[in-house]
Each structure stands twice: as structure tokens, then as C-alpha cells.
Length: 381
Ligand SMILES: CC(=O)SCCNC(=O)CCNC(=O)[C@H](O)C(C)(C)COP(=O)(O)OP(=O)(O)OC[C@H]1O[C@@H](n2cnc3c(N)ncnc32)[C@H](O)[C@@H]1OP(=O)(O)O
Ligand SMILES: O=C([O-])CC(=O)C(=O)O
Image (cartoon, rainbow, N blue to C red; front, side, top):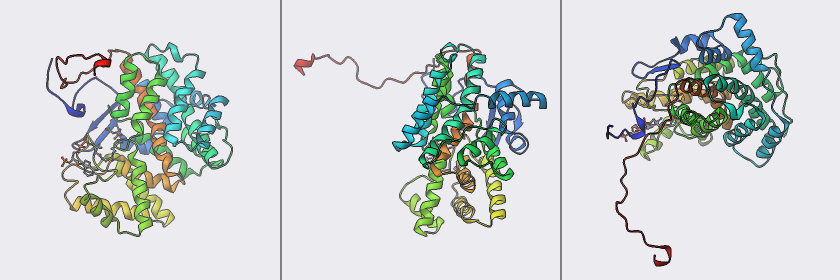
């Protein structure tokens, strides 16, 4: 047993996985050997889910059957929708509403307390993955004073979500853009939320518990919550009419961190940030609205000049994603829930993979508290 302390578990190997690999030195991400760039440009989110959950890219026939099975699970019980309605009316944050609703979904899955192997986890995971967009879209519709829109099984996972959110079928560019974002966020090794789901899964708890825990972990500003923070910064800059570079200077002078920069594994720019930046550039070119692109690139250029990027604090996936979602008309506080909607696929894949050769995850802390404290009864203290 080693007594070496690894703060934040940095670099600690806890499992073997075939699912995804991150090379933080060169900025490379693969899912089961396939480069993220190829998948983002060439595969749908459904193909990526199949790849993660079943081990290989599907044939056309396999994909049709898989997508149909997934789409068939989109409906959510009325009780859950009513809870979502109550949470929206009470002004709950969307990420917290999603966490509550995901936990509640288990009550309507007869298999939920029987999961004791990877296959059961994937079966339940398929239902969770199919239902999360329905929950999220219903929440947003209620918040807007509109009625939830029922899912359309004939639309893709990405297209159906945008349809349920707006009540209108998305155009091809919006659907393709959103689908690409889902693919980019689907998996990323043992990040904090995936590890959370795995720890829960390692107790052989059901996968609803794991996904609920994953949502909680993802919500924090050091993790998935950063995509919302980046967009809030861009709005703050815009509202103050401040030069974006001045905003960053002030923030750094005050000792603050720049959201969307830095990563535990990447020491260079995140490959997903490159892909999203290029997508944002395309969208800005076609709309003529370059504001967010101008702000983000100005910030990145300034921090590069300041040597931050050279020190390994470079743009991560959250830096450009919000600007892309903005072009789709998605509200800022839905960005992290959308991340969860995609990452759920990865959480489920990792839980299922780990459970195939499960061992309870249980690290330890170095005890630094007092020793031999003399107990004094309550009435004598
Ligand atoms: C999907 C994702 O989860 S991607 C990450 C999303 N999170 C963010 O964008 C939030 C901003 N980024 C951060 O807070 C961090 O970079 C993290 C949490 C992502 C990674 O952190 P860690 O690997 O634990 O690095 P740590 O917190 O130890 O920071 C190392 C050094 O870099 C600095 N640093 C890290 N990120 C930033 C940043 N965004 N802005 C300015 N400085 C930073 C720290 O201040 C620290 O400097 P010091 O050594 O002089 O004290
Ligand atoms: O890997 C990490 O630490 C953070 C993460 O989830 C990602 O970058 O997608």
C-alpha cells in the first residue's frame, strides 16, 4: 500500500477501459480508437452511442434498429412531467430539475432495482438517454409559459430535442450542429462526473443513481457548469461595452480564473474546442453575426500572448460550445443540461463496462485529525 497522496486523484489509474482515450499532450481524443474529428463530422450521436455501448460502429441495419428502439423510449410518465412543471414554476435551475427528474424516472422502470450486470445497465441506460431530452424540453417549455411538446419518434435524437424545445422541426444546419455537439460531449475518459457515476455503479446501485450523481458532479463550475459561465461572461462583456481583453485583464488582476480555460488532462487546446470554433466560424459566416466569435477569439489571442496557453491553460470544450448553442436559440442555463444529455451516454457506457468486472471503488484519506482524544460526556462539556 502506497502512502503517496495524489490530490484530486491526478494521474491515478483506477480502471482499464476500451471506451475513450485522451492524449493531453498533443490534444487528441478517441472513442474506441476513432478520432473525435472523424466522429464529429461523419457519425450521428446515435452511431456514437451504439459505438460506446456495443463496441463497434453499427451497420445501417443495426443503426436503424438501435435508433428506433431509442426513439421508442422517449415518452415520459405524466407524473414526471408534472414534477418538472412544478420545478419550473418554482423557478428551479434546469440542472437541478434534471437531477430530480432523472432520479424520479427510476420509479417508472420495472427493471431499475434489478440491475446487476452491464447488460441491464445498458438497457436502463437506453431508457434514461431517450427520456432526458423529453424532461429537459418540457422544463424549458413550461418556463416559457408553453405546453410540453410530445416527442416525435421519426426525428433523430438531436432533431427531436430541438423540435420539443421549440415546437418546430429544426432546419438541417441546426440539427446537424446540435448533433455534432452531442457527439463531441459524449465521453471523455474518467472525468469527474463519469468517475462519480462509476463510483456509484461500483456499489452495484442501479444506473439511475449513477446518472443522477453524474448530473450533480457535472453541474459544478469547474466541470460542465463552465459552458454556462463562459456565455455569461460574454453577455457581461457585451452589456458593459467593455473590451473583451480588458475584461480578461481585470479578471486576472483580481486573481480570478477564466471559465472555459484549463483542463486536468489537456496541456494544449482541446481538440473539441477547435471543432466547435470552426463550427462557430461557419455559423457566423452564414449569419453575418460575428460578435461571440470576435469576443472569444480576442480572449484566446490575448491569453495566448500572455503565455497562459503555453503554460498549459488552453481553451477547453466549454469555451466555444455556448456560442454555438446561442446560434440555435438555446437559453444559457440549458447549456450544462445539454452537456448532461450527451454525457449520459458516456456515464452509462463506463458504468456498464466497469460492472462487467466490478470491484467496489473505495480509496482512502490520510488521517490528519487528533489522536487519543479523551471523550467527555455531553453534560460535562
Ligand atoms: C468539461 C470540463 O470539465 S472542461 C473544464 C471546465 N472548467 C473550466 O473551464 C473552469 C476553469 N478551469 C479550471 O478551473 C481548471 O483549469 C480545471 C478545474 C478545469 C482544471 O484544474 P486542475 O487540473 O486541478 O488545475 P489547478 O486548479 O491545480 O490549476 C493549476 C494552475 O493553473 C491555473 N489555472 C487553471 N485554470 C485556470 C483558468 N481557467 N484561468 C486562470 N488560471 C487557471 C491555476 O490558478 C493554477 O495556477 P497556480 O499553479 O499558479 O496556482
Ligand atoms: O475530462 C475532464 O476532466 C473534463 C471533461 O469531462 C471533459 O473535458 O469533457
